Image (cartoon, rainbow, N blue to C red; front, side, top):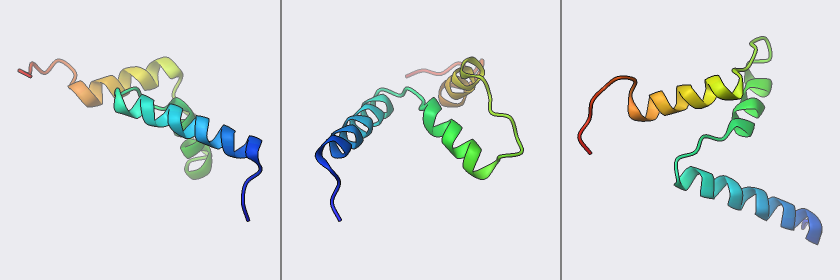
Length: 68
């Protein structure tokens, strides 16, 4: 069963937005909230600011000097 045209357009736009954000390394807070609600309903999710900081530290290392 296919999607209606407006639904397909919204799905495509959402997928494109997520793909572009991942390509440039921006974390997806909406996906994180969905994951937390589905798999950890008993835990409170991080705020956007804490989530973003944690993702940056995970990607670049907190206080670790790197070349390249």
